[in-house]
Image (cartoon, rainbow, N blue to C red):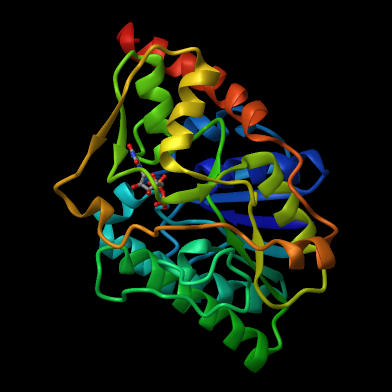
Length: 320
Ligand code: UDP
């Protein structure tokens, strides 16, 4: 297959490029590099089955040649990033989704949208099944991401129903691993950076809010299976092992062997406005329709991620 992956230089996009290349496909990677980083795909540059196009998918997209699949993974994804880039976030979820759907239709390609557990907002049911409609504040600071992704899902279903396009939607829950940016502001890199540099781990609020963390390789496997499946409605892909952020901070300290302390902070900016109090995927649908479930436990995933960040922290502290 010849596949277009948007957000190719990002954390998940770059791992997907690797997977499709490893499976023998040809990949066209696209990214505007707002939050993506060419280092993530440097090893693919020059590969005979990989090409890269630097482009903002919120503008008209031109890709020469045939395409069999389009995977739309471009978007700022860390709350920090989308608060800093609110309008590009809204545009890539809306205009970018429309443009990539239009491209898929023109090429007769199958389409896969990267959606998010944020479509459930601050959920009133836990765990969240795909049938839950969500509890999102459209005018809060996180609305720029949540509503863009909700619009993206609606647009994708409209192309499926009105144009008969083959579409798939993955709702991605918190995912971590190598190639996340050290300073993207999310809890995993923040805590690991703090633990490795001997700084206190900053737990926002009282730390009782929960998340469920999935290692990137499980996500990649779920996305790959979903693309080739017959499931036309959204599917949650996440690890159902739920824990409080305070417990997570303790886990990072333990696995990294750090002597850092934990501090409770109340950020004065908008970072914790509408912060979901709980989040855990109901993955019964993924098990049923994809035969998928996560394989990598938190300790194993954290060890691999910490090893990756150790190098980055060393480079940074040595001024390299
Ligand atoms: N968080 C925290 N300390 C940090 C960064 C994040 O306590 O240094 C909390 C944040 O308030 C949220 C959770 O960790 O409750 C996950 O935040 P993240 O930014 O990773 O992503 P989210 O799941 O909110 O999209």
